[in-house]
Length: 292
Image (cartoon, rainbow, N blue to C red):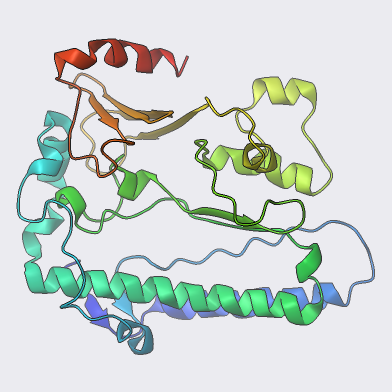
């Protein structure tokens, strides 16, 4: 991971360009379709993803000497929790990154993000040219984030915000313009959203049994006290990790290991784990119950 960084070409980039081209071609054909049946197009890009190798034109957009080094670069602050320390013993990628390679890797990641932005721009342009843009809702999101050296971790695999948090941006008919919503949401909200966008809303029974809320409802202020849930127990795990977000709080339960608690309003960078602070005992007891 620390060696495959910088400017260059990869199969992932070639794949993503082919996806963008296929999406644009599909849109052009859809525009010629005279039927009015609702449709959904899923456009999935691999980048930004390891290897952190970006097309040269996008890599050159950023200067390695000007990017900020990762949070807690050079110390063990991100894995003082015993469960996180054990994970880091297995996923010790940062031991192979010095300051220079770290800066190059970050610039490469930024370049890959800009590369994907350009592909999304191509798809948006195809929508505009087709005449479908005004009647189309677009949702931009991702399956996970990337630690990118923060807290001593690279890739995903943690429940810190860098990894567990994902972008979620919507635009189109009936979607509020320029509005930012702080209500926690997760990817399970996409299923009811897509169904209702296509005229197939969940039945009342399905709503009671299935997780997820139409994102249009959240965008318009529904359920501000809802709980968002995530979990991790894959590569490098020695135990299960389960996270809930409730209001300004994040609680991470590590099975058979100490938990972690962060106040994301006061501590958005998750630098101060409150789990061992006796003054937060009531909060520590309350948060797990919110997931029930």
